[in-house]
Length: 339
Ligand SMILES: NC(=O)c1ccc[n+]([C@@H]2O[C@H](COP(=O)([O-])OP(=O)(O)OC[C@H]3O[C@@H](n4cnc5c(N)ncnc54)[C@H](OP(=O)(O)O)[C@@H]3O)[C@@H](O)[C@H]2O)c1
Image (cartoon, rainbow, N blue to C red; front, side, top):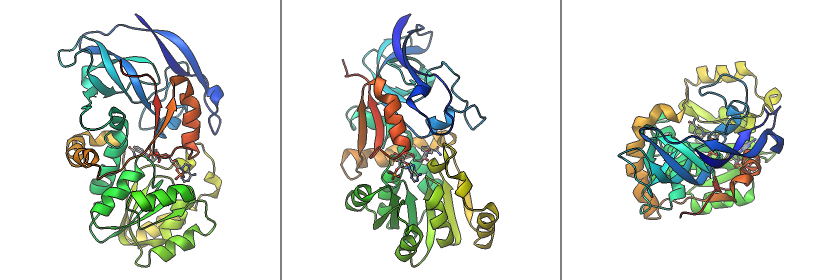
């Protein structure tokens, strides 16, 4: 047994989560069994989906039970191994949870190549969010050269790669993000032709002015006012990839959401294809994603940005920030230095 530090789910949120929903504690961690390794966590990923795991509802994945460690991906170093595939000192990525140490199965982790890029990128541009961006753009939207795409949460972990990959396909790429600083970054560094603040009172009119030929692809990350503004601009036979709807994760704003029949009708009359997707159904597409994007990150052709909170104890506050748009790029927690 090893003692480890962890953040447990102390209570379930009513609406927006608060710091009181989390508890920092020391607990015993079992020893690794056959085929398992003990990992010392160096980086923890914070992701919007974690909000859903805090609720007592059935979804595409199970909830976190009260008192259990908050779920999450992490990068760490192997400190003890009962697997012939992993040795102490290996850097790995897996579902460590919000904790200083984790026991992982060799079947549910992979090695990280520290030569390719900083190891934290295995949680961002070269990890789950990057994979999500690539699959959503290529497989779900089947985005084509010359088409117009709108990307919401345009500078976030997922959106920032969607925008850059769409630009590399010679698409017309329009972003929607929170605030002038993020929008300037989207245009200057991520290849967006233009970017609009989703809090603008003229969001719908501004988006319309920027897309005179209509919208062929919408990469949906947020729902809310952005979806309301984009939907009327969608072309006949256009596509929407529903990746996320963070504006509604805490139940806020649902009463203002567009009326369902209006939305349903526009899908019909425009013969649109609207497809939700969850990245863990697309694990077979990780290798081609990594083959394409890995070298582009290594060469500096793909930009990425990280927001880093220092120390596991600061994970809950950073998570609350993330839900409100306080992150600028991939939200991470630096848990420990490499030994
Ligand atoms: N389907 C899947 O398998 C899958 C996998 C990964 C992620 N996702 C989803 O993809 C989306 C982006 O995830 P991410 O990891 O890349 O997070 P992120 O974009 O790095 O961070 C979340 C961002 O959402 C934006 N946001 C928050 N509240 C908003 C609101 N009310 N209206 C508009 N924007 C709002 C904020 O950006 P601004 O400051 O720009 O508003 C915030 O920075 C999320 O919805 C997530 O759940 C889905």
